[in-house]
Length: 337
Image 1 (cartoon, rainbow, N blue to C red):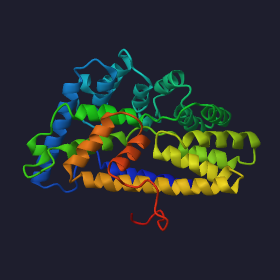
Image 2 (cartoon, rainbow, N blue to C red):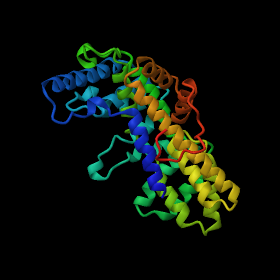
Image 3 (cartoon, helix red, strand yellow):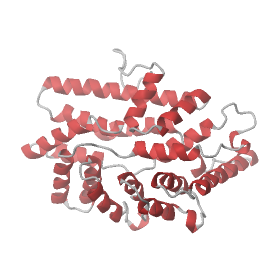
Image 4 (cartoon, rainbow, N blue to C red):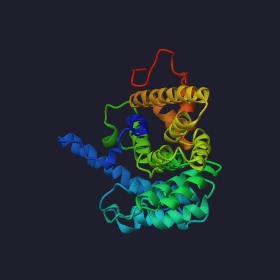
């Protein structure tokens, strides 16, 4: 059940962000599409080249994220080199290590990057997202006792942050260093390239590693008859309800709905989860409008540059455009807004 709920959130957020334009080739491109795609790739490469000259970790992180989907990058401007430079730079924090999790070989089943995960455990021991990421790895490797300890540490954590907010900030600052050229925007476009920048920022941010939320849900529900596990899951759920992402908040509310013995708590969690789906769907609609409205696109980029979390960005955007955060009484998930 939770799997479908998490999938619905992921699909809505993907619709909100759009694809990472330069990372994908249009299907059956004609000559004009092919030329624009080539120009878009060059724009992305130019952004990497300009930003890679900096020495601070966050700009280097932004450059690395832009470089990750690019093919045939020179070694000095490759994702691997840039994220290594970011990690070695003075002031590098756990958000850099989180991005470094993807510096691995998926075909060799070497993901996420084990060194980056070990570093994260040291850098952010009070972040539940780190322990839920480790929980997924331990379950995959058959280390069930370790996974149980991961759950306990996640429940005892002080925050949940998957660093999507930091990723959006790094990317949005990076894409604004150069305006998209006319052959990328299109000579008849009135968007001034804001739609291109927005799609790059939100599209590339979607590719970040995610904690094992579904595995956590299964672990909690399959062991709900064990008092210590149930207690940790309910404690974790309260933390996740205030987590950095809609997906984390969804899991937190789900755990309260299925594990709490109080019927009133179950109904309250169900109501809040319904509102959460409404919020994400409303943000998706706003983001679709941004593709044809320069002011909305620029405002969403501004919100991304301001930092915060993915959840705070969603709620702030809805507030700024006077969009309600509570679902209408006659609305149900799956219905059009």
